[in-house]
Length: 514
Ligand code: GDP
Image 1 (tube, rainbow, N blue to C red):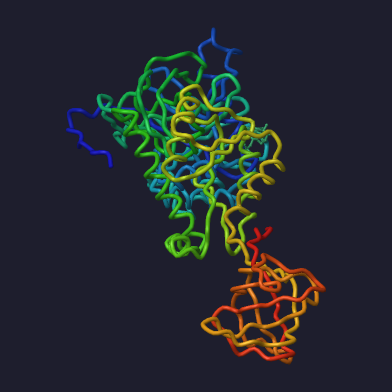
Image 2: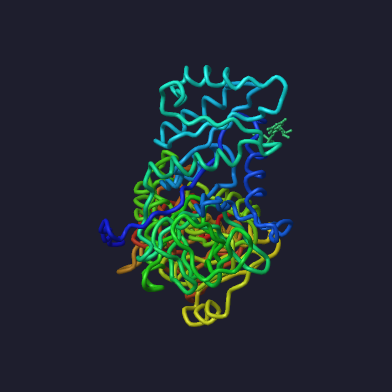
């Protein structure tokens, strides 16, 4: 979809390594990350780092830079990976020297190995009396991590995350391993990066932390990010400073998303808003298909049923103020689906109603539901112009009620019969060119000209048709009520006998209820 121009070797410039800290619970991952951040912050910035953007950069004495993913553990590592984004270059495996190799240590090793990420071992808590760094080396050797000093190729560094001992050396070693990896990226192309964290900020709107992988991300850039898109309105670095551009391996908080993207999604700079929208929509459709497939439902089958008229669907776009209300709404709306009518959420996201939503609604015949969200001015204009059905709510049960009504409208009306009256045949007359006319007495209700009618003989329906003609004495009449006599001519039927009963009825279309 996006043409990839291969980089020439001379375009590639060194970039900082991106590092994740892994290890067993309580072995000191969080403490180590904190210590690393604190020891490497310039004096004047200390105390001022309240900013949390999901990743941070540290600058070593020699000027080298390392990017740390702030989320410790392989969960972050794997959930990001789930979307196909591989951003980790090096894993720091924290093992407490007083505890040794534990189940999650092994899990971490397996993850790093599976993703081909080199491991640097931080043997932690060496300040503790019971610390046995040699035991950690022995145990890890059994898992294939053999220390360099024993002839293997894994770097081990003894540290105390608490006192800071050995931490500088650890950083240096990470730097060395990074050198061996020769990490490079082309900074002079359209930017591409991975979203590692997202947040809906009251003032800033949907924001996300992006780690730039290649190219340089700049304020003003138009981008697609997973199934959403936007334009970089502003960027902040990990110290909370506003920046104009971000080079490879740099984490930045980006403002200007149409909607909240998902962690693990890739952000790609493109040259037009239209392209960004198209790409977002394409990916959305693809993902929808994949999701249905994963659930064991073949979307094609559903589409076929819809086309064949077996299922009708109400297409809905949901925009909500929070992830919580969005999920709740999606679930309760989809639960309204029955065998005959389905609610299909073709798009659901956190954020205001945008032009994209309106266009999607127009193109797919969907209604838009805004839950504690409103259209932006541009979207409002488009709604007027395109006459899209947009409904805004603040209470969930009202949404459910309305959608239920809308669904009801999609149900095929059922034919309901209502008996108008019946009459007994007391005599028959053969009339030339007309046929048999029945002389009747109305037993109950009324007999109506043109209405549907059946002839019942000994409890069996022998004719089902229509009252063609109705007379009282010689006069044509519209209807005859109970207790009166009348002449009835049934359409295309002459086999009438005395004692038969003519039942007159009508069919009403009734809207079934869900
Ligand atoms: P995590 O679960 O791996 O993130 O572990 P934490 O960083 O939360 O640390 C677990 C506990 O070990 C905390 O009470 C820390 O204060 C303590 N701890 C972490 N590193 C060290 C260390 O180097 N020395 C000592 N003595 N305690 C440590």
